[in-house]
Image (tube, rainbow, N blue to C red; front, side, top):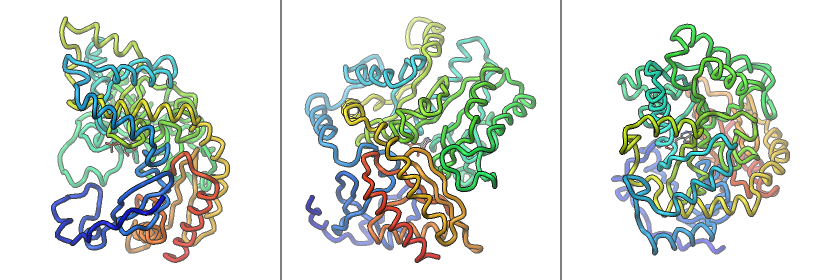
Amino acid sequence: MAPPAPSPAITATDLDAHWMGFTANRAFKSAPRLLASAKGMYYTTADGRPILDGVAGLWCVNAGHGREAITQAIAKSAATLDYAPAGFQLGHPAAFALADKLTALMPRKLERVFFTNSGSESVDTALKIALAYWQAAGETQRVRFVGRLRGYHGVGFGGMSVGGIEANRKAFGAQLLPHADHLPQTHGIAANKFSRGQPAAGGDLADALEEIVAKRGGETIAAVIVEPVAGSAGVLVPPKGYLERLRALCDKYGILLIFDEVITGFGRLGASFAIEYFGVTPDLVTMAKGLTNGAVPMGAVMMRKEIYDRVINAAQAGIEFMHGYTYGGHPLACAAGLASLEIHRSEKLADRARAMAPYFEQAVHSLRDHPHVVDVRNVGLMAGIELESRADKVGARAMEAYLDCFREGLLIRVTGDIIALSPPLIIEKGQIDEIVAKLGAALKRVA
Ligand code: PLP
């Protein structure tokens, strides 16, 4: 593909108006990184340089960039039905069709779908469904949530409260949801360093739920929410047995279990969802990102039929659940979702990811002897490479590696001093080699 014509020069003033989220605005605006187009495994910058996408945009472009079938489906939908609510007493066929297709990807228990526009909205929706369920079930004292340290569940007030990333909260000063406790994080066990797949030690960390139950009373807890693999905090793979124990404890105390699969869904681990990969089924699951291949914002919450039935049947005639978004189930998003799921099916992307995972694992672990690498871990097509922090500044070394990689034509993602990789599932072996070569060179340069 020919690189696009360079965009007209952008001056610093042109960048002033846009307050960019999760960005060092001052640094960015003094040296912007602007992406102009994307195809397959590559972005092209505004000045015409190819950038190999090592992170599927932001963990979302799982089928690769610029998929014709998705583009055409969106265009067709825009020309036919630009907007219709999928709620608020109206519907349109594509939302029902997409919901139906999603249920086919899930274990038979997770049969109902609520559409949102993002991962954050999916999380807040799932928490509200859990609360509504217990109200409907007559257990009105179940109002507490349990998240996990280093968990990321988006930026809504609910998601921030159950999330376990302190930095995301401290700027706001306010008390968030009053009833949130946190399990310990599952990482940092010395014996687990340089794990391949699930680490051996730490399955018993799930037992910390017993302590929260002892303190708060199991009958007051509405739900436990965890990412099956914590993504944003730096790819923390659950120790063997951990998710199974969490499921068993939730069952023991009648607590709903929510898996936040915003990152792990849609083939990332080499299975349609982490639910399938780990063989543990939650009561609710949140998703977004890969659902539309990132092409149109969309999220969803799926749940056991019994949860839906309970909330619906407990209500008086009329609206049963006072919740919904103007754009939830937007026709363009549904069109993109249907086209995207069809690509996943016809190209067997999850199988492809599973087949490529051993090569990817071998490649990322070859970085272990590079300067300042203190850990490498991976599962499916997802890897974390942790660097020793500089004494004076946490995150500086990884950020320098990020900038170096971008200059050299590779997009990675960093959080603190952890580098995350999550390439599109269409990646070829040669491109894995390119990622590792460029990242390896960057690590040497920023040593
Ligand atoms: N949950 C998880 C596990 C995520 O990784 C993310 C985003 O990365 C979110 C929720 C929030 O999604 P969004 O940014 O679409 O609101």
